[in-house]
Amino acid sequence: MESVRIIPCLDVKEGRVVKGVNFVNLRDARDPVEAAEAYCREGADELVFLDILATVENRGTMREWVKKVAERVTIPFAVGGGIRNTRDMEELFGLGVTKVSINTAAVKNPELIKQAAAEFGKDRLVVAIDGHKNPAGSKVPRLEVVIRSGSEATGMDIVGWARKVEELGAGEILLTSKDADGTEEGYDLEMTKAVAEAVNIPVIASGGAGKLEHLYEAVTIGKAAAVLAASIFHFGEITIPEAKEYLRDKGIPVKI
Image (cartoon, rainbow, N blue to C red; front, side, top):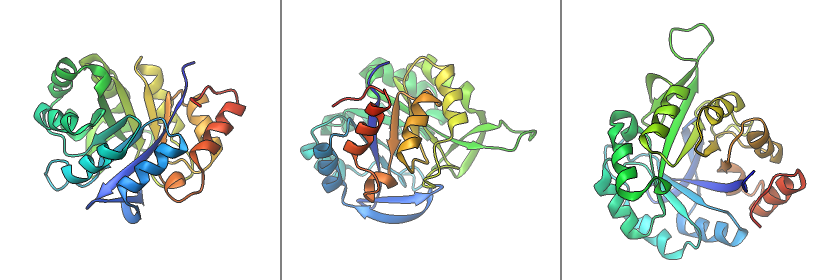
């Protein structure tokens, strides 16, 4: 097993890091630059920044905070939200972004995945998939893709879409359960495992981390290659060193 990555996620709204539950009820957490510097010092492996209102407001990613973060961060970081084409990606890479993450744009235009992989390389392309769990026996997929910050259902099956994005050239998948997001009750292990077992690219588990055991379960049960969390790190419930020590003691390889 390769080393499991520990990745803080920073949702950015109006230049501030925020965190909510089920993608709503957002509360202020901290300044993105200060947060990035703190996580670098703590030993985070990567960072993910999401401009959470960019797509909903039909605009591009706010460049001001991205530039400030790039000037101070010392580890790889991805940026998502409002990325609509390869020109947007090129601009972000020019600012110092390591990877870009696309979600709604990929669903609306799957060819964008192929174009981005060809132009920049698959290692720089993350496809984010937000999922919602429907009742068994309903006429829609049990594990359904949602877009536009979870506000729009697609009728698409998550596993089928995950296989498609891999085929088109995605380097990894950032999988978030809308139902589990911010609840701190644990990742959606059914969803995570279903996607991780269906593809050969890394899957980052996201949504629901509340205690150390949840990180372990995401890797051992959910088969995730990396664990992403927000609330537990932003509000000091768990530190990056604590998370790494816990996983290491459980026999999970992590970067020191």
